[in-house]
Image (cartoon, rainbow, N blue to C red; front, side, top):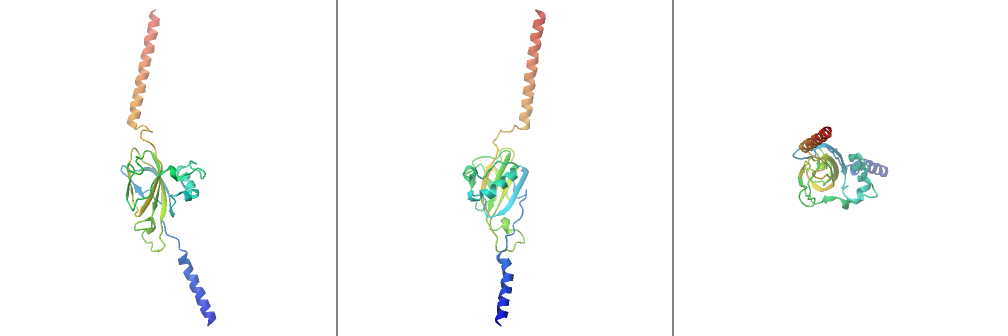
Length: 209
């Protein structure tokens, strides 16, 4: 009888163990996770990763992720400091982020790198359709995209947003618009024509002397 009880207990423990060690189901990040008007382009992402990676304690994990997105070695573990970047840690489930407002007080230009942390609430990445697990948790993803010129808002397609960090973005006017390029080319052409006319007059003058 004692052997039977022991055997039954061990069998029950064996079948209970996997559920106790279950891993939260998280989707892969997608270019459709965020959007804006006009549409974002040249977008790539990394994640979702379980937990909040938008803190200094996560830098050893975070640095290779960011460098992988950038295709460079811009960040290093020894110099990486979260205090160098602007973070809004009070999104409180917002589905839209206005970068022209505090704490960012800027607009996005050109290639931009952000990280977004979500809680485990309704509509979050871990609350995906079909995920009936009770061990849902918070998660983080990173996005690198072309924001165009003076973009102020992006929309988030997941719920339970918690924190957003702006790692880098360009400045307005850093890259001339096509119309500006056209005016510059015309201007250079006009200067060149004027210089040629000036040289021609000088040559004629010498010929007449």
